[in-house]
Length: 99
Length: 257
Image 1 (cartoon, one colour):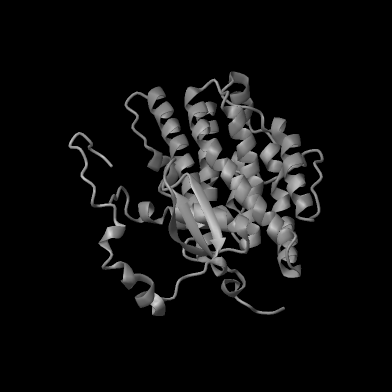
Image 2 (tube, one colour):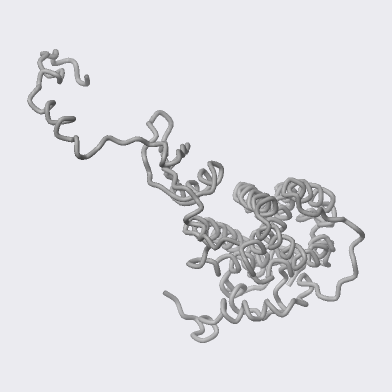
């Protein structure tokens, strides 16, 4: 028998929970599980005990590709001085409450 | 005490004792996620026990003018021979395999029972079961998947499941041997005779055991059994469990938060 503790056997999963009908799934956290079925059940027990959700998505963490923090300068800074990208230059009629 | 009250206390004792056993895992689970899962199930069961104890206390107080016993009196101030839980529920946790097999056997039984008790002529019993059925469906699902995972897993996990079966199987028949309070409950329509659940229980359990590639169970005639938790003749384990569970109320009577 190989003596590998279960933590090292079980991959990490990211959990996304939809709180109410019509809302988006939001990242809730991560957990360990042997497979997708177990990940959903663990998510149910870990993240929806207090009525937080009506729908759960799980995805293995290794399938998530992230932007690199080192590139954040070239990635995000150029948007700083380009206010015209925001639709803030229209005059809305007073009657229009929400846009 | 009337036999219907005993019938209600029997349901409560089953849930409390099994719930307490599960709570012994809290902080000791094999992984964090399963520690939370088994603790959730413990809380569900203790919640069910509370409802049944409250119902029983109300009945007992009604029939005794001036009576004011509470759920806590019933849970904390009885000795082991007064408990009416099935012996399966009080069996020690052992390893993870034994704990979840006990849960699987018992939740399958509770689910069939609660579904029948939805039709109970006692609205209190029917109401509690209505609330408890959903919880129990999840307990069956959770434990079934573990039985399959370990039974059809590695050589070690399978060996542990087979050992768990050897330890727990002798306590299955008691579930289906009716006690006096069950005859009375069935006669009045408040409850049912447990042997009416037997075939379906074996059918459902064997279906999961087959998926788990584990040996299936034979439902023979009910054997004669000397120990009977329903009659208050328990295995040695219940006394130890109560010693821990009741310690605080026994050492500091009437203490509260």
